[in-house]
Image (cartoon, rainbow, N blue to C red; front, side, top):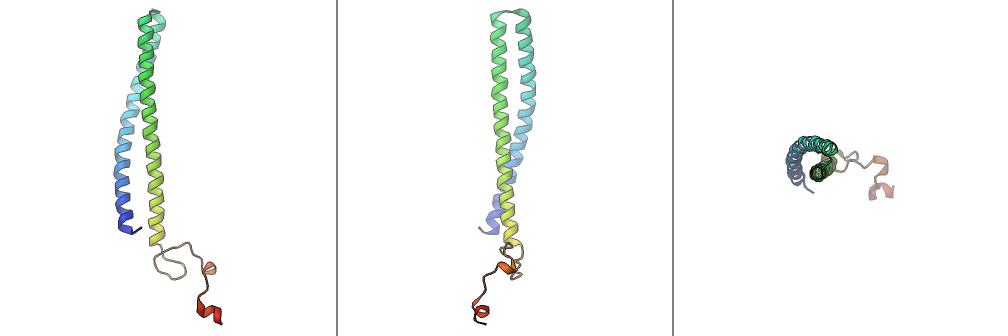
Length: 124
């Protein structure tokens, strides 16, 4: 893959990470709020002992749980994007790092002792 394609993909991933991290911040705040609301509703249901209060407490808990699942999905998406970004950065670094055999940009994983001998050296 060419460096320009890698760089474009890295820019795209960086933008997606920025949006997801912003979304995660909002989700964290909302989860905190709904968790507190669900706990308040649970306490009100315990004190009032009415069926309506129990229904409200269950609904509040369901909403909090649903938002927590959404928040967890966003966090997982961020982790996946970070892994993809790391992979692309590794590829970009490998493509631009000097080759240890030739000194030219290329695959830097080749060690001089691991290089396949060329025809000149095998004839000697």
